[in-house]
Image 1: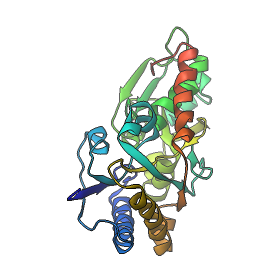
Image 2 (image 1 turned 90 degrees about the vertical axis):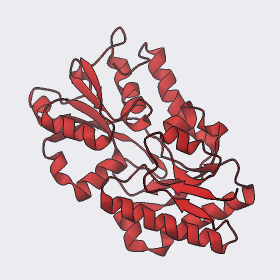
Image 3 (image 1 turned 90 degrees about the horizontal axis):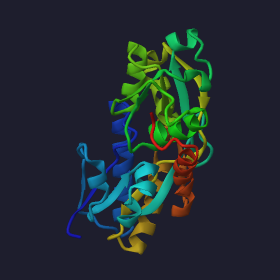
Image 4 (image 1 turned 180 degrees about the horizontal axis):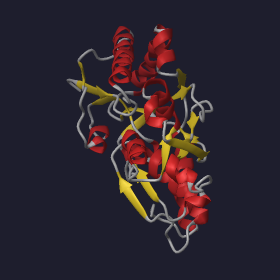
Length: 274
């Protein structure tokens, strides 16, 4: 490959977080080059909206995807799993994470203090291809759904930040928020949580994986894994700000837990978040 590309689009909750992730990426690329990896690498600060197309590019050296497209949308055919970050955030256990179930303060005051009590309320969800916002919530709701429905409506709002804003604005009542994103918001944007209440958590699942194209030779993939470890250890204050404990080596089969969530919801007659 004459030139490679990289992008870390998943946890840029604020510009500050985005800058920290870019700095970690640059340190990883430096360590990778020093170990004999390719040096001609372009960092994409704005990879565009079609992330599935980005992750399928044969010149993708490094990116982070969601477990749902990785396991459910065929990404395993295009990428190889490098590592999964382990975070210091409530809801995280090693390289596994949960989504936090939240409701608006208004819905809480009207009795929505459990997920079962949210029947007939309005949901906000970041996207159809999200495990944390859609698949995990669908799995949690499935035991309470009747005839394939639980919510009165589902608004697809594009991000977890927008889901929280929808709750605060009174245009939605309930959402599932990735617990790492929620920790970042508590650190940097606590005002978004003033009118939000926590009512539970979803099942645990493997975290958002770092991946590379199958075009990258195995020996370079091993060097890149080591480079991620070095970048994490290179700046302890940065790692602390990112709540990043390190990187764990999971296998692709570990991500079957995400498919299992979808299968269990379907078995209960709830194939779509509705």
